Image 1: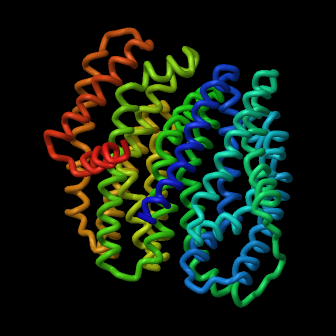
Image 2 (image 1 turned 90 degrees about the horizontal axis):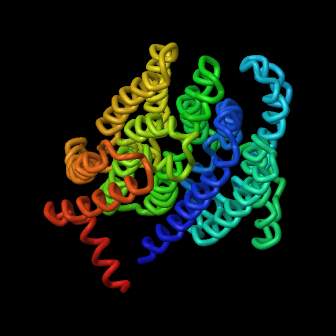
Length: 471
């Protein structure tokens, strides 16, 4: 029951933030243009890389270390803030060159402002990590839901008053600022500036392998915006970025609940057999939800974007469909990554990350000269190949063979896949309006529910029983 409470608060945090962000994005996107979103998206790779160097994998190291004390947390805090400030200075100097690279002078000022988020986030890493280690997911949820709501409201007000792309910039920048204010005023957080070189060296052995992995993850995730921004118009990049944004709104919450909450809980479980049972449960529940959401978005993409975001954003629909297809196997990447991190196999985690992003970059090099659709097809092939490698390489560290994972995938993907195909055929040829979205939604969820009843899906039965018990 305690574990369910942790997952519940983590879900409130992630899904609450994603819901607020999605609704805010709907209102803000109607006031801005694809070019506004494309301009900010051009800088995502630089901010992402700076953030990974700042965090450096030490957060996971602090959670994994059984006897971490105040000196450990203070040491990593000092490191985070120092590196964050250094990286901000580097980005400040590089800003004119970035603007020249993309041939957009506005990017110089945007980068110098939005890069401040690296410093502000650096101030919060250790305190959030401490809350995660202590399983204080309720506190984390309250902090992040409040900051997401206030920052989204600020972004909307700025967009409403004609600030254009600066609305997105200040919205992103305000999140860590609000977190800091809340932690100081409500949580009574006071930073400690003590640094111990030996403690730092001890944790760096684990942290640096993860940092290398996270660094290449950022390259793999954001290099597409770099190439698309360079070889296509900022408007096209805006459509692509909106497709990513909608996909993230659907999946980041699910992924983060599983990744952050399960890591903290399973890392505390010493029994291999109990860990295996926990992994199997997470595989089934994560896949059940993930595939349902994925196929709903794939089938409803065109009317969904037209209804919520407006006609100017309809070109994002195909991009979103391809992006979601590329992330279909994401549950297996996430959970297998957790397995080897908890098992202490940070070198294997690093190597698999190198391979994953190497495949992504290779696919991009072969496709970037063509259309964005072609680029995304290449990304799908690369992601599926790397996911299969993760399943084969990592399963034994959680006691779950690749064949067991494959069976889970087949069992959980069949019904939503067929429900999507059936529902899409119902609305094919109809106008992409609210009626089509309503028809698809009803057909999909009825077919999904009935299909899982017929096949005896245990996960759906558990959720139904919990709902009836709650009622």
